[in-house]
Image 1: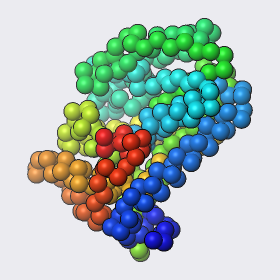
Image 2: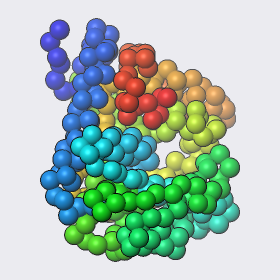
Image 3: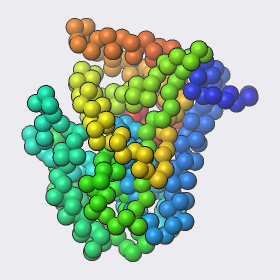
Image 4: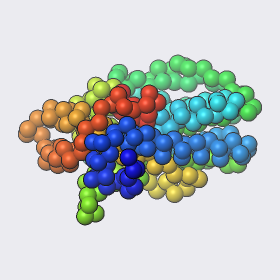
Length: 309
């Protein structure tokens, strides 16, 4: 069948979702994968760039982007290592406080900055270090969980919300870094140009499903922390996004179709008297406009697997 353009229009998405859902998934994945390959090529063509700073907001697809980049580098004979900034989170109870007195998990001060600086220095001077891993279930960090040893031609990826923050960048050699920003940069519109799913709506839906499945987080909990997530993005990420060397749109035209059913089931668990009931009802209403696509039609390494499983 003829491929439909403008796949950020609800009616066009639904036509393909109904008549050729596999093609819709393939188009979605190819557009994103092509951009990731562009980033890998840019770094490989500039051999002075040894450090990739990969930043993006919550549920942008940073983890999958990092994995795909590592795969492309490896295919070209280049070893690549990833340092997740999330693994440097302070243990629960040690975070800075937001203005309302609640823990501010989005602040760069929620990271163990001295340990991050020490680890970075070790990597750049000796090529070796022990990395921590943060357990999101126990909300505690496991120290010295992973050991990495880098060669002179290897590439290092720093991945996380704060990867473009000057506090981190100022500890690194400027000629060696390449800066990448990944996020949902597209919206879904109806035929009249009204927004059906905004960029944050799409990311929230991703996070809702992922955190319910993998982080033991209820719909109520995800909504409760989303305010601070948005505030943290506004304060600590968006002011630096235009400093990136390249921006990657992780929007997949098929994603609302893929996540619709599971997200709706999770939203239905929200208590009727919740303060988030109105937001929940609006999101459920908008998701109901999309045709379903079975998760099985996604490729095994699709970015959406990060959220849908």
